[in-house]
Image 1 (cartoon, rainbow, N blue to C red):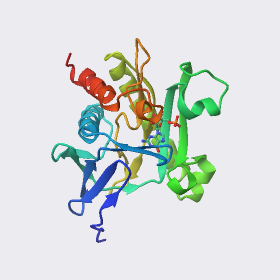
Image 2 (cartoon, helix red, strand yellow):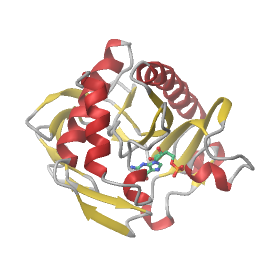
Image 3 (cartoon, protein in one colour):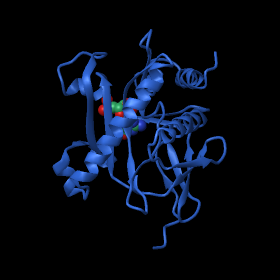
Image 4 (spheres, helix red, strand yellow):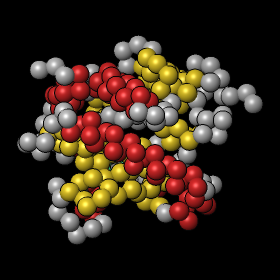
Length: 235
Ligand code: 5GP
């Protein structure tokens, strides 16, 4: 099948076809929140998210997680495998924050007895609603596929939680997206960055993620740079 050479432009990234098998994933400096209602640009955000995603994808690959990461193509660009994307967002939570507070009578910051996995339908027009296995089936995603995505997401959580703990950071929650490769395997896609995860400083509980922008908690670039420095081990 001939694949489209169409450029897909999202809110924070551009997917530029490189050939039949690869995309360039370009990280933009744009930030959006609340389904695009709040918008801004932060010079350097694209670069920081590209670096952080690269480090995390490489580390996950070393631990046996299949990801779409192939290589780096410049400052804010990665080369990734073309996949047939699932229209889903898989969220994993370790600590109560964000939308979980609207669902359960728990206080922000409470550690959950075990991680919670949630499924959302990725559709801006509907505001990314939470869905279950029955809804996913109607969307053409089978129970076995969802179970595998949940299994991978929980394994990714174990790996990332431990990794960030060593850097003095609490991995509060995060969102993953998956696709299927030509062999029919489920592969971790999209990005893993402070745009898609909540990271709190273990001592101060300060946000080192997009909540800084969502809730006007300070300077986004300072927060993302602090996270980056912790990852690369710079003072
Ligand atoms: P919540 O449901 O609490 O708003 O989000 C849970 C976690 O998933 C947070 O780390 C948040 O950043 C991430 N997340 C959920 N949906 C989206 C989304 O549509 N875009 C991005 N960038 N992150 C999301």
